[in-house]
Image (tube, rainbow, N blue to C red; front, side, top):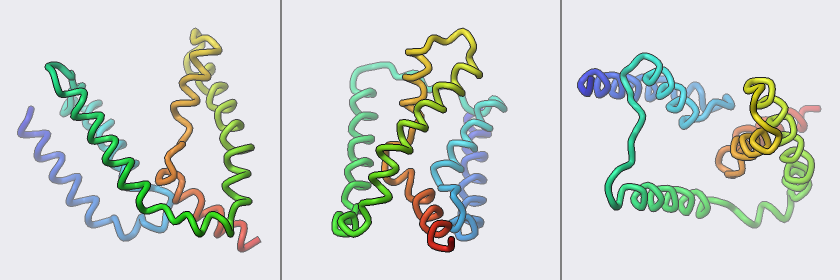
Length: 148
């Protein structure tokens, strides 16, 4: 199983490398592609859930996440925010709460036995709060709104 997963991962990386230039203009990001490929690998039995056991494994994962978020934050251009505060303000005051409400509604449709609080928690977790995740959507909105 390990050998087949390594082959799958290598093929996935090469395939992504071949199409990455073409999908850069679409709202599909690299992490989204690899999450989808991970789901396919899990569904086909090539990947098993990771069991975090032993001391230090959880701390290593948290440190990795902290470093990733820090490197994303260093690429943010704060000066550009002062000129374009309208769009982020609307996204945070209207878009995010509306997305949470619609996500909670979707969670109750997908999981009928889930309670309201659990549905709101699921929706809140799934709302993209990382600026890097929303970059493609923001760029597309600017293109669409600028053309209108």
